[in-house]
Length: 373
Image (cartoon, rainbow, N blue to C red; front, side, top):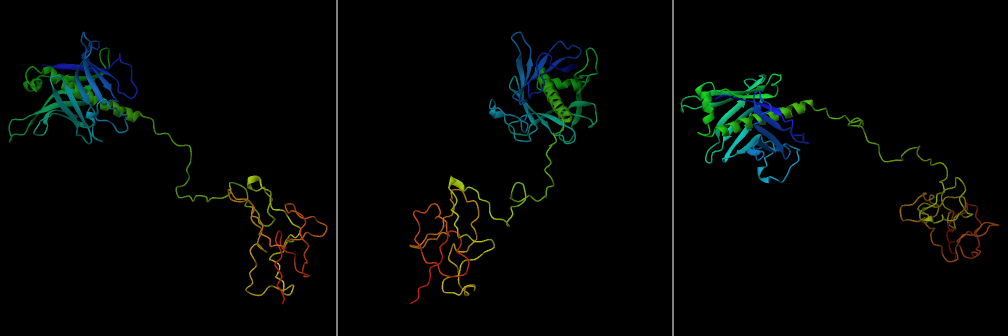
């Protein structure tokens, strides 16, 4: 018994995003006579072979292709998850029929259909492959076993190929030749009276093959990955260290700029006894001859003769306050000047030593004179 089918894209089912198109199976030369519809659901992981009836479409077979990497999943069928990289499609049909389609090819796809066996490896059923990778058709065949010592015989019973274009052409043709008794015997593969089950198995294998071909064609025609417009530069280029965003480095020659410190606190008052330009170091203590450096080992007290504190303070810090004054020892204002703001009353007059050295630094008291006994 020969049978020839044609497969087309369904004109009655609108495309669904992230799903393969719905296919229809018709008798060859009769595109309006729909025998089966092949519907993809759950992101192509649950596919149904439906046949029309007066009560509506009836499901005769169901296929579970492996989930592709990166595809969206669903919890509607958690029991049919496949391991990553699996190439086995599990199939179910009416009358408790179950089988699998495994793609074992390396250079060119080779689809092997098998029946599950409870206590032994799966029983081989059919096989679909190309005679060579460049062939324009696929061969469907099975192996006939005559005994343990006799090699199995390869029997080709059908082909899958493209239909030539024409009024009733186009699409893909699936043919079961049925010329010889061995070719006709394929209809009894699943037992007497189950010829329709054989038809479901053959059509599901052919439709799964077409799905793979559609995906391959889509991958080849996909646009290349977009090129980034940003040039990251050479991989080993040194990264610039932290520093000012722009502009030349600040100059260290001139006096520091007066900036308002944080917390809106006024800067320390400027006194008349500020250091003249170029003067460094502190005033030598009383008891040493003027215009001579202090003896070796002498260390000025903290805050005397040191550098000007840097402008700017850390977060939460106010300007550094002058060191505490000893009782009766406060800086005297210059002649004709008022005491600086922030000091209550006029400071007591003290006797300044008659020295010719430079006056003490700004905001600092002269060192205490040594007592002479």
